Length: 531
Image (cartoon, rainbow, N blue to C red; front, side, top):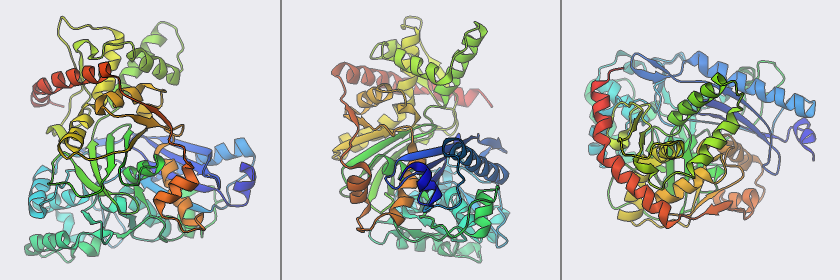
């Protein structure tokens, strides 16, 4: 079938992912190839000291994104989307969305970016003997309890952004196991919330006398391929305000952006890994066995089919690069030079390849927000240099590209050097890798490991959740997820691999030594420069 027939016969699959700066929709055909897309740009807001997106912004963004997809389909194929084979919803993981019995949100959505949960995360990590990150839903919930927030007694349902959208369009209070593992730890054997930890938490808060227990308010955990409900008439109207989309479409378990990243890079098998690098960055290594002990820098989550994953999550990645590119664009316009933004990114990324392997001594701290891995509750973007450093454009851009993955390197050194985790293949995806060969080479130097990037590197999580939706309806042989991705979706395509050079590895290590030694400068900026 050609794409128009696929759409007209309702055999296309839709994936929508809520990223930090963009909501993206991807429509795929029966062979899992993207045939149309739409997007909506948005930004989080700092309200009362907490990062949030309003409910109004969430729904306007979703509807505008879908409308953009619909427009793209009309322009390309002169047809309407009336029905679909399946839908998948994904979003930035973690955070805190608490609702009462009337389905009203009790406090503004608190995103993964917030770092106000330090006391809660530390106490829970000790209680569970398990690293509980600041951004996890259970940390947010317990911090609200510690702060005696009035709304906690009224909680009827606690979920993530993906879980919220799925609930509103299907009526089902469920979550994919990968996203669920970012609420409270999941037991890889049962594929649901760890029973011992749930019991310990309930006992911990028992003196508060709340009318709920933890499992009463959490979504049900589902693995990839399970039935997660169908698009309701109300859900169809919320998604497509033009009224063309019909209800009854199967919707796969909603997943977090970490899970969709693993799927989009064919990295759900043990001994595979991926790095997702955009507004934030994270690496995911699928483990053969549990780590020897908990590490504060490493989060334990799962693949969408429930395998144990070691995750290094960094709050900051490309936002500071984006800010600098905007400055260069303004300068070009000042000179009367019209510059396409994508072309400008390509040129600035490529000039970084001409920089010194150690960036000539320059350092970039890309901390738009706090960075838990390096112990900073807040961030101040900084460029650090001395008078004798080689300050030129190539080194400047290379320092920013190194800085975007510097924290990621710190966490992965624990996995690869201390825990001796074996990885056969690491695949990169996200905006950092869009300029061919540049981000890939930088990451290879940082991890001292070959890095693969596929042609779909820029498609990211929206394509990943579309694949998970397709897995629900287009898997007649009942393959497990890893085999489905290997044999059906990727069919042996492992992408283009770049190996690190000794000069780049040595240069990155020198850069990182300077980075670690000068962290006190960033700490002082946070302490003394008030927002």
